[in-house]
Amino acid sequence: MTRLAPPDSPVADQGWRLLIVGAGQRTVDVLLPALHRAMPTARVAAICDPDPAVAVRIAGLTQAGRLVDDVSVFAELDRALAAGPYQVAILACPHDLHQKATLRLTDAHIAVWKEKPYALTLQQAAQLAPRNVRVLAHRPHGQLLQIATDRMAAWGRLLSYRIRITRPTGDYTGTWRASAERAGGGAICDLGYHAFDLISRLTGGPSARPATVYAVTTGSPVHRPAVEVEESAHLTITHADGCAGTVHLSRCEERADEMDLVAEQGRITISGDQSVLRITTPAGRTHHAEVTAADDDPWAAMLCHHAQTLSDTAVTAAEARIGIAATALMEAAYTSVRLGRPAHVASCAGAAPATVPTLEGRAS
Image (tube, rainbow, N blue to C red; front, side, top):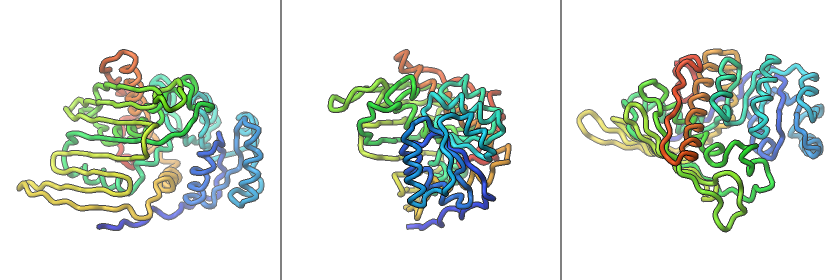
């Protein structure tokens, strides 16, 4: 068993002022602690959320020592912007509000780190391509996936992959996520975007791009309240170079994060914080190694990476390319559901700078 080094140390963020747009439970439970670990001297200067209960919640966090004393809470984005300046705005609001807010923030020359998806449609994605926008996709920054991308580069062409992301989601019928208009979709949009992001990073070359998607979805099981969006989906994806993949997504199963990548000279299987590497030598001999991620903190690593490369336009261009490709996969999946047959994935050539990223999102 191999023990890996802990993630990068906190960055020198020079006392940045951050604006957070959207302060739901996920922001409080996941995002704010990760920000403190990754960027301890950065300051959440303002929070924007129209919910009147947010101010009370933020006051409680301040009393608990999780925020500094002078965090301002605004119900409207324009008022929050007037209280600037900010170096970075983090978007964690409902999906239907993302595009307008992102355009407004980047017009104000503020870098935007947004919760997925990159966009709900390719048309929206194309609007974001020339702007300073990145998606908070944390999985690529996990230790095991970092190893995976390093190994895959040496093992030749990717032949197939299998991705499974499932969650035991509770009753969310009273939230915006239950609305197709507000959320943009269910399992395909919410869980699937993570898979599409990974696929876009691993198969980014023109000859390997996804060609078709066939998606089958299900509604709510009989024991759960019905919602407008799909709760589960199974996708079959074919690529221009012959690679084939499957993606299984569900909000109605026990938690799982699994990936199986098969290349010409090796295979990596990842489940949670465990992975198995199988290496085939040119002579036909097979070796395998079991790897455990030690003290893995992909959220903090992701935020460190974005902070360290904030002014690197090559990284931003690479993230835009990944975001557009992931959006194209998502859009094709919903087209397949609507038509009841495989759908072609739109070519993204020319939609963003053709910088080829690695799994970490860095230009190469």
